[in-house]
Amino acid sequence: MNPNAAHEPIIKIENLYKKYGDNVVLDGFNLNLYQGENLVIMGKSGSGKSVMIKCLIGLEIPDSGTIEIMSQKLEHLSLKALDEIRADIGFLFQGSALYDSMTVRENLEFPLRRHISKFGNVKDTLPLVEEALQNVGLKNVIDLMPNELSGGMKRRVALARTLILKPKIIIYDEPTTGLDPITSKEIILLMKSVQEKYKTSSIIITHDVDCARVIANRMILLIDGKNYAEGTFAELSTSQDPKVKAFFK
Ligand SMILES: Nc1ncnc2c1ncn2[C@@H]1O[C@H](COP(=O)(O)OP(=O)(O)OP(=O)(O)O)[C@@H](O)[C@H]1O
Ligand SMILES: [Mg+2]
Image (cartoon, rainbow, N blue to C red; front, side, top):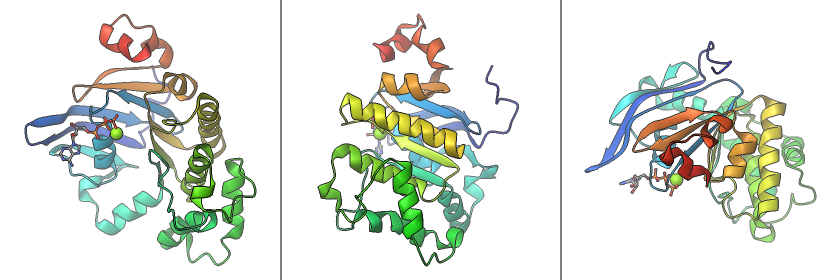
């Protein structure tokens, strides 16, 4: 049993349904994310992982089901309250999504300005920007433009931009896609060190079995809109169920 199971989950999704026309994407999906854990979600392309994340952050409205983040039901929240919750959630989108016309420093300052309610009007952002870059192992990039960075460096800057908000929860959508194996490994270890240093709770969407092996405290396999299987990497990777086995080939 999960040692955290006695505690209230920091994110709780119950019976989530979402369809587009006749396309039933989420068909009774459930998820509990506990304090301090790395929860990996695996599912085929098109299985609804991104739709689930969009429901979670209020970008899509589910047809039914409930989502609670830090004991607050999303459907009851005002826009202002939703924005405050979002300040506690960091996202790392696939492909890093830096602002191309801004320097690294400006990219990192952007979330601080956007979430003034959480941070106040920070006058001197430089120490925060420097700390965030240091946390992801980057030096001498503060004045560079994104197009002057390698793919792995961009991913690090994006992670730094997420960390600068000191989020309680981090959601990673395909954090290692498009990176070579060595850089992937560096990013995975970085994610792990972030969790250990800041005690963040994370949801990690990935196809990358090596990533799951290193990072997952627990995993959910999303098949046909439901959590088809749940367990540790060791449990799922040794399953005899052909549908589960297919993920670990
Ligand atoms: N706004 C939308 N309107 C209509 N259909 C949508 C919309 N967003 C997603 N879908 C459909 O929902 C399904 C799940 O999409 P989703 O992006 O969640 O897949 P995914 O699991 O994230 O896949 P991938 O691994 O490729 O990122 C797909 O069939 C997609 O066409
Ligand atoms: Mg997706």
